[in-house]
Length: 113
Length: 117
Image (cartoon, rainbow over all chains, first blue to last red; front, side, top):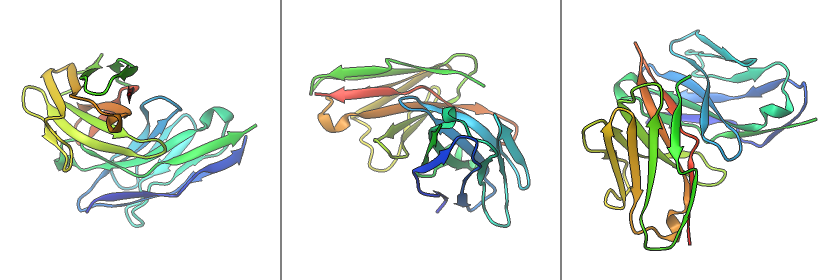
């Protein structure tokens, strides 16, 4: 079945370090891919998305490229800040699923000053 | 991005009582609302999908008589936890589906923390 796998956390980085959170997917069709961020005690916020192969989603310094050949959508940021500490969820949806999202397990990021 | 509100943000209730959680899309029409449950340090578990004006579709293992979902308008969906018990304590999040050209983007509410004593 369709699924999303993320690297396990927690990930602990120093401020201004480079961030990569790996995400791979399995899908029977052509999914759209998303990264959501959840700050403590809050709901999810859409961080970025990509709807087709080779698309790059970007927002707030974060980037992810839809790689069909490796079925991946890794999240990157060149220089993290303490305020980026949160849980990051990779997710996919298929057009014929009425918008239903399939989430990865989430990766907790902790950035130390 | 589109905004979804949830009310209340937290609620504490006694075992056996019912609790209603409201989810509103403030600046778009959510033809579809999704309800999720999240346990601490875990991912979101989809409970049910509701389309405006029709019955909700529940995921396997979710009791539809216990978790009543109503989606009476394009901007409001409600989840009622009936006869709540301590094991129903959780973080409940709704997501509104916004129709796009080729894909659907979901926007989430801030969540409701339910504690059943």
